[in-house]
Image (cartoon, rainbow, N blue to C red; front, side, top):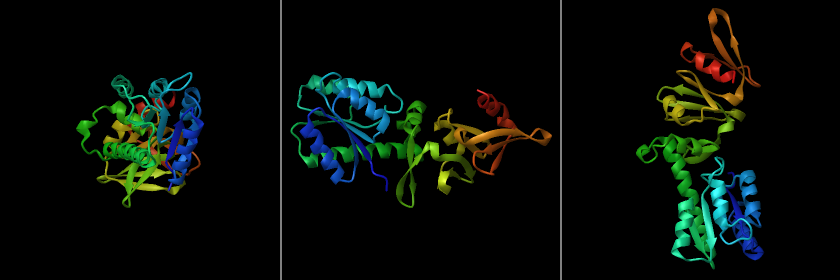
Length: 260
């Protein structure tokens, strides 16, 4: 199973190293940054599953780090935990207003930190699963939020296990009665109880396109669109002999976006 990734942004070397060692012993993959500026850069490169960040740092402080990452669509939803020795109510409010998920107060013990990390990772995974499964959708009515969550990856329940699926790995999604089949690279396929209409509402339109009532394609895997006899159009895939017919209902939309 792929290790969950955690970025530690802390200017005090002893604290930074202690947290790193603790997390690696718990089988997390880690990256570290010695200041806020480096932390912002590494967050965008490393794309961690969770960030632990000190507040009081020279240069860019923890608040500025969180504010910067919240403005970036690739990092805006990463769970964020502050490390702090400050306990003023105004400081707590400031962090929460910026989107912090939790605070850990110095000095802290290992079990406290590990519990906070596990709680936030589980909460985020459950949020993604809830959106994907279509349960309690009244709590998550914003299509923009759903698209942000799905921008990089999502989790599906497969054989009683949560499996992460990267959007860039999806070739197409095909309707299969009340289910949809997710066709991925490396011959990985998943069957999910979700309609194509539901998929179309939450998938980013710059990455996916509906070409048929039974088919959604990934733009990244389309090699070309070919017109054949009787005016029929077909999608040809990269590195594959498979092809899919575009229904007349979707031809205009597909051609417009394909030529952009």
